[in-house]
Length: 104
Image (cartoon, rainbow, N blue to C red; front, side):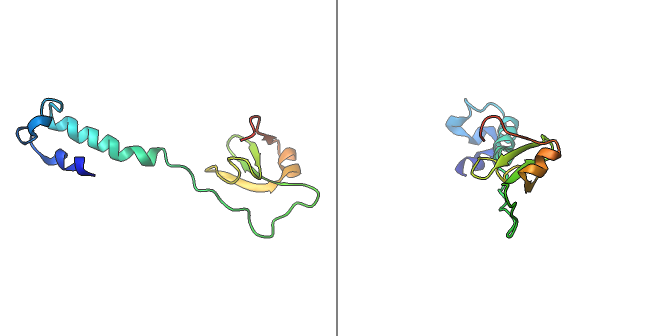
């Protein structure tokens, strides 16, 4: 990132940038904020359904444990929440979990 070099320069050496960037401390805090931005919004890596897991006469769902909401195969969050598990839909219903309301 070419703008990172500006963080180490004193104000007198910033030249034409000095009028927009009044203090070196501001640059450092801005640089730290921008460097921390991507990991804060990184998406959770999706997990694959375990091989051999099947639910005869039922379907496999992904249950988000904290919210107690399950997602069906083909939906956006199937296997993709931080804290969840695969299980049969019937077992999830017996456990008190519910299906999502918006089809994600």
